[in-house]
Image 1 (tube, rainbow, N blue to C red):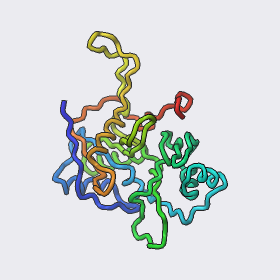
Image 2 (image 1 turned 120 degrees about the vertical axis):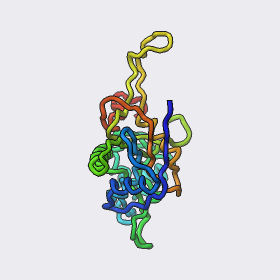
Image 3 (image 1 turned 180 degrees about the horizontal axis):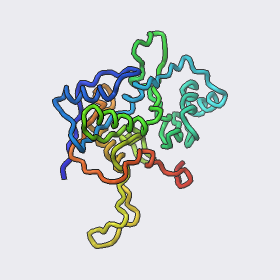
Length: 257
């Protein structure tokens, strides 16, 4: 009946090797908040990527023949296309200005989630780059590790959500979606429950993790807000705590792959 979202202020720029559990705890303290059982902490993928050092200097990338040919087709930097292909398992759609791929993590998105905004690493020289940032190596595993470390340091069991943003077929604009999770079920299965007329539901699977990621995206912002951590309070999520990879549809059953 009631859900509270708190976008945390004062999160510093993350550098490779930074302790994200310590950063989250310090940010909660700075915002006069203490973790409670049942809270969920949503963290943008960029925070993890920066901590993992997932920076790529395009000036050091040598594009393959395939990347060069595809770059001409989509009108993109061939070095960027090479990075995108290295992060992908298949190309879904290619057109002028657009490159949609199946990411190695299983979801379909533009440019394999390779991001050029806020992608400059600390201490990078002015003559280096242009820089891009890749998605985290294994978001589900990192979410589980972060959850365990926060529990060890705070004595509180929290749920963790790793978010990014993507576009969707037939719809304008981007929305937040989940690329990693731990401590809660990413899917809510309502099949078998009765509707108001007593008819059992047959197909209703709610993408809970994606719904939460979209909500976090509303308060986190997309540009210079500097609010990559969102606290959810008031959730009641029950069920198997599988990772967000469960949300990926099998390519054999994907009509738009």
